[in-house]
Image (cartoon, rainbow, N blue to C red; front, side, top):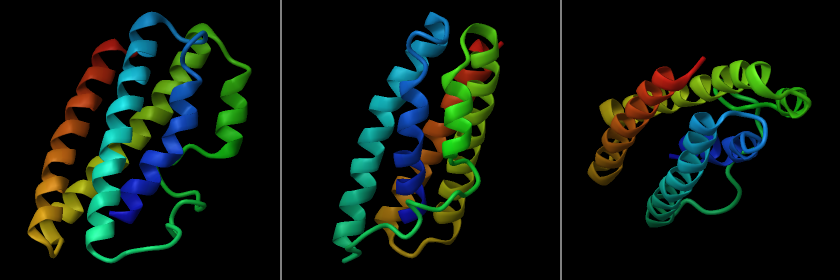
Length: 138
């Protein structure tokens, strides 16, 4: 749960770069994902609180697979159009793939039934988001 929550938090700056740099289809996806993933982050936080997990998330400051790094975000900041969309899409795909991997792992090996249920739902949601990204990506 903590890893998925950290992933959700780290993608926000990436998603915020799309407007003005990417075409409308990718910008629309970025905006929708920002809203949807913030809701997902809220669900994760609620389960973490129920489990008694408090304090800072130890994964939030680590550069882990699927997390856009500060260097990657700086590199994207100067790009527009096709160049931006190619790199943005690659980073977003890596993020979504990692979320599916993490959710499937929790679904298959997690302890609490509610956590496994959320993980199953999130794996399905992120798999659909990957399919949508593949449909619109250049």
